[in-house]
Image (cartoon, rainbow, N blue to C red):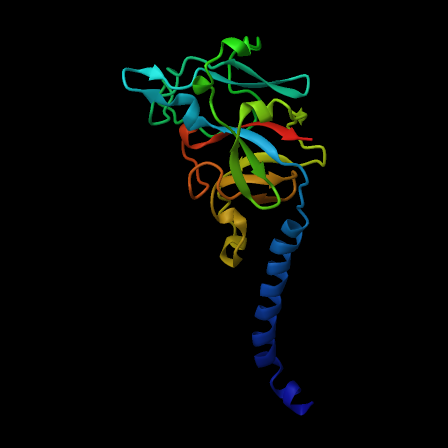
Amino acid sequence: MNFFRKNSFLIAGIVLPIIFVIVLALAIYVPVSRIRPAYNFLYTNNADMTRMLPGGRQQYKYGYQVQDGHLVLVPLPDPDPVSPDGALDDGVTGLPDVSSTSTASSSAPVDEKAVNQAEVAPVYEYDVQDNTMHVISYDDAKKLTVDAGPSSPDGYTVTYEYASGSILDIFGSEGNVSGYAIGTDNVKKRLPGLGTDDGYSESYADGVTFLAWIK
């Protein structure tokens, strides 16, 4: 006991920083570990929406909308407002946006029998359990019952989050990089693989457009 009394300041100098690190780690990891979404979601890559073929012809002519709980095909808008480098006509970079549930400008579905499937933009499914994604055919996608959200049936949303630059980043917080995330207003966790390879999207073309939750 005499040792502890004589060296109380030394012990405090060692123990208190350790306690501080433990508390910060718990503040970071405990809330994130409680994010357990149960519903996968569908999305499109914005780069697909603006991809041009030689001669200035748009590669894909059809995107998607949610109508009556199902995906339907609709014509894609003119790609002119977004240049190949992702800059808008006014010179402002087009920021990633997952708030839309449509990749197209028209609400009128098209006659699918007259559509060339090669002109239909790819649609992707994101697996929220494995943090993986894969292309799903439109024939399979249109059979799914979906919810346009923006919140999932269990209360989560997909958003684009910018780096916070807080002190928690030093201890491994996911706020140290920009990227797509899933969560609630209070806590979110990153969704690896959305956007560019590292998850960071600095222009519209790097980003994704959320379509719907799979019910």
